[in-house]
Length: 362
Image (tube, rainbow, N blue to C red):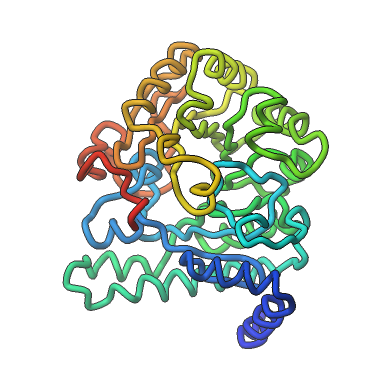
């Protein structure tokens, strides 16, 4: 397929300039460092991509799963659309700009080849900015020109993109692995995926319907029930699966909640469990307080309790990212060559510079 990227850019500009609402969203996204791809997709450089080439420090996906941070594309096919308006989310939401749009239904369906092609091009352009930088490892910059992984997450809900299977397949055809992150409100999409991602993540914060309605603020009926249906599907996936429990201090870090989380794990038997601190970033700063962001010691404590309740082994941690890894298998399944002994020696690849959360100031 021959793609006219000049026409793609023209269509993108026409869309985002078609209303004051879309223009306001676009301006906010650009200020936050997003690069728009296709029409409504986006790429953003990850903090750890920069750290990898400048200081040879790597993200937890490198430590545990072999993902080379400098060769990882952080992207989304739907930048501002989701079935939830979670309090902790950094996604731009209508109240952030004082305007309304239907954020449950993406108005455009981009071609998967366009999204993949442009995401690779934008990643290369971002990393090319480190060429000649005396602090950057130039061999790593050269390697970054050939990305090997796509994290389909970033912002918005990827399962709202109707051609998700094709997007995953297109990345795989080009030799990239994929991690797909979802809140699990579209079990119908997960069930119908013709192509599984290399690894599937389910993000979880709430433990019952009442708290889900309060914290995740679903925009569609039966969202809690749909999430429960997703839990039923997890065992059917051939690829590794991960439950990521995002811990919000004072909300979901106490005994009653962790007991319910443990039941989710027992029910679905994901391959891995990640316990990660909420990040005081983006739009969430207008909804939560800085005090809601747990310390790494808080995260460790929650990880130990969940390990005891689930029988999953507490294998590793990454202090700068405030995250710990639990697993029902002895070693995580690796998808690349990065950080070969990262599980056992996390401090070798991700030394902590301070007790501050680094990404807040990136």
